[in-house]
Image (cartoon, rainbow, N blue to C red; front, side, top):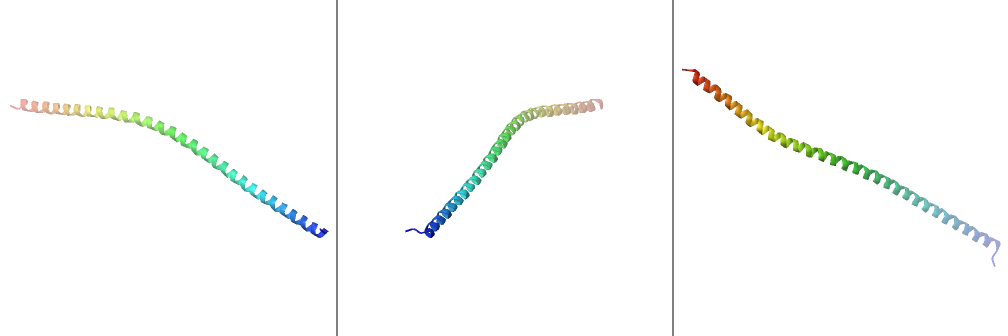
Length: 108
C-alpha cells in the first residue's frame, strides 16, 4: 500500500524528471537555434562573397577587352615605327650622299 510519503516521493521524482527533461529540451533547442543562426550568417557571407566574385569577373572582362585594344594599338605602332625608322635611314643616307657628292664636285 502506498503511503503519503511514497506518493510524495514519487511525485517529487516525476517533477524532477520532468524539469530535467524540459531543461534538456530547452538547452538542445537553444543550441539548434544557435547553429541555425550560424548557418544563416555563413549563407549571408557566402552570398556576399559570390556577389563580389561576380563583380570581379565583370571588371576582369572589362580589363581584358581594354588590354586587347591596347595590344592591337601596340602592333600598329610597331609597324609604324619600323616604317619611320626606314624613312629616317633613307633620309640620312640621302643627305649623306648629297653632302659627299657636293664636296667632291665642288673641289677641283
